[in-house]
Amino acid sequence: MSARAETLLWAAQRASAAVLALCVAAHLATVIYAVRGGLSAAEILGRTRGEPGWLVFYVVFVLAVAVHAPIGLRAVCAEWLGWRGRSRDIALLAFAVLLGWTGVRAAIGVFA
Amino acid sequence: MSRWVALVHRLSGVALAAFLPLHFWALGRALEGAAALDRFLAWTEHPLLKLSEWAIVLLLAVHLGGGLRVLALEFLPWRDWQKGLAAAAATVAFAVGLAFALAL
Amino acid sequence: MSETLRVSVWRGGADGAFRHYEVPRHASQTVLDVVTHIQRRIDPTLAYRFACRVGMCGSCAMTVNGTPRWTCRTHVDAVAAGGALQIGPLRNLPLIRDLVTDMREFFDKWARARGRFEGERTRRDDFARVEPGSPRRELAEAGIECIGCGVCYSACDVVAWNRDYLGPAALNRAWTLANDARDVAGAERLRAVAGDAGCHACHTHMSCSERCPKRISPTAGISGLKRASAAAALRGEL
Image 1 (cartoon, one colour):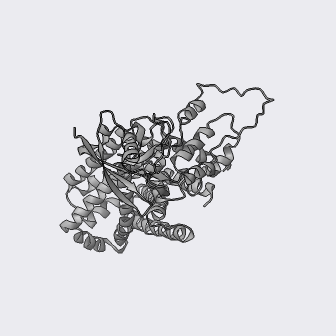
Image 2 (image 1 turned 90 degrees about the vertical axis):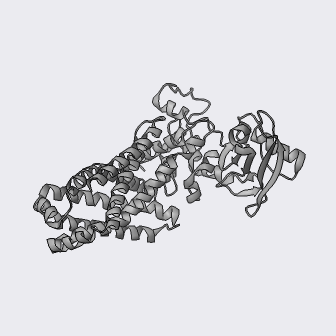
Image 3 (image 1 turned 30 degrees about the horizontal axis):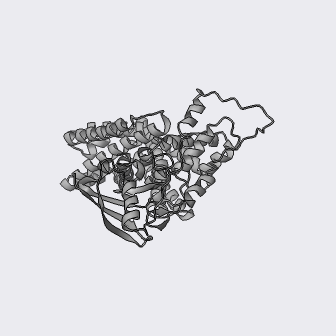
């Protein structure tokens, strides 16, 4: 990949990392709070359904993950599996789409 | 020292990337209604799975800590406090894992 | 303190093996003293490099008990736990024989990173004026003492994982030039270092900064190149 493309991937990874730092901190705090006293579907969905603010939060969270995780895996593929080039990048793009799709679907399922 | 923090950061990232599709799929079951989600949640009551949940939260905290270390090294002017950073990252991870364990 | 050291030294090529020697132990002995003793008194076929033997040239770098070091500056007392020493060639470089590695790829990468000064003044122009206390000059100063010994390159995990990775020394040199106010090849240099096996492949393991005998921090310079290339890319200049 060109210097420009490699650099933009690096920048996207770091930018999504910054977004995720905030999202993960918020997510961990709410998960720890919510898990007290056990989990049930009714309990979870009772708290989360019809919450547009949380829906937006989790969609942003999911999209940041869909950018961040595949770029991170890209280095692992090259350095530990010797997998470089077009096929690797296409596979990771597919993984990004998978994460984005299933994640947004889950967010809608829980918060819409 | 830093290369071990970096290694843990990488391994936790790979583990999280493997876990996330399952996590999204499970939550997506909520779309099928509360009963479907409840069946899944009942399955996660198994002690081995409770342990895995704790492990995943720990991995997330560790990956966050390691990630903050990378961001600090790449963007902030630093001298020798990178050692302090590694320690801070480890502490945050431990604290969060502990809080989660206590909450269980 | 025991009277003798049990020393394992790599002999042969990549398919060689460690051979064992007994070397008399002395006070203030360095690892280079040990290697020299073996070659002069025990086995003259041992191949190794050294020059100044006082920590200025970097020629004597080898792997001592798993860690890349300058052997002339490594006291035996500091590393020979239990009277045993293991000495091998620098990692990550093709092996010629015994303790001697082929340094060509190390310096080729230096060239690929455009690690050479490119100015535009001639002898007919006035001197360039560079403010020594300026931020850019201080950043350059922090990295220009590199003597190309290869210890950082040998310590780097990413070099081991990616044979095309330019490596900490080449990137550190590129960073010093990026901060040289007289240099005019900045844009091309950023393009050279920000590619597939360039600065973005660094994962801040910091083995280079930990091992550098000149206390240079290539990690800091590489981080600088990451930021500089990102700024250039976002401005459409990369």
